[in-house]
Length: 193
Length: 142
Image 1: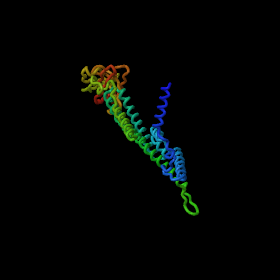
Image 2 (image 1 turned 30 degrees about the vertical axis):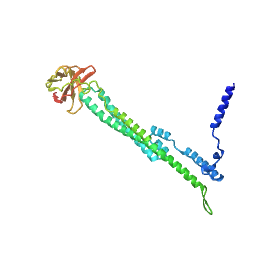
Image 3 (image 1 turned 180 degrees about the vertical axis):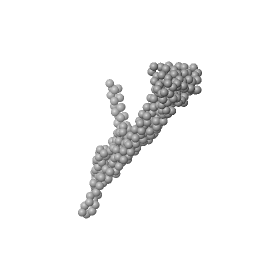
Image 4 (image 1 turned 45 degrees about the vertical axis):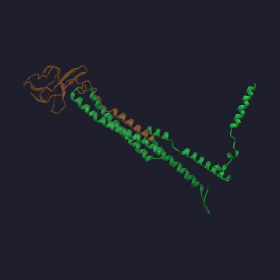
């Protein structure tokens, strides 16, 4: 029993010796943040609250990159439309439809001749139908390839355009905020800081 | 990082497209896909004789040089109204001569016709027909 008490006392004294003293002065020293007085601190708080409010506005208006990419994957140009780039979105959508349409058209033509090739029993028909099926199949692949490139570039573009759009949103929110603090008065312009 | 993934995506799509290139020659009678398929030769020395004037039953007799037996099992007889017109099979024979008009379902009326012959070879998957010879003109008299 005595041994246990002695051990506890030893541990307590060791922990007290090792523990650092809590420096209340250092903790309450406001000058470390660059605040010279209470007004400075209040001003900083106000600025922080303003920035938080702007950030909330930004969060409301900003476009999600992930959603933009998903939308452009589903329908090329959709993400660009979301980023208010209607012309670019229209070009992507139209060119993708054109490429897919052309690819399907040539694929269908190729399949028509290929079916005839499979059914042919005359050597000339076998050769001519096979040759007639090859060219449209190549065109179909070329159009599909170009379509795939447009599709991939559209995804690449939506990443960039979403980042640009979001940067512009922030700039606009900041500009609006500055504008709201600029007041024209009888005595002149007043800027609220 | 995003750019790199986009490039990987493009390369993946292109690789998929390139790997799917080319049409397979799946016709079992296609000599280009199966080297054991022998294409019947074009027949030669086609001679055509119409029925004589005033004959009650009109007919057209044809003879040609027989193809080797390893490449040919029979012949199709075609008839058309013009050199470049559509030709129709009017008879199938297994020897190097034919008589169009000799069978009950043959219909030969006086007039001008073009005949051509093509050889065929029987395979388990069907008959492979070779190229037809040049059409030969004949006039069946009244």
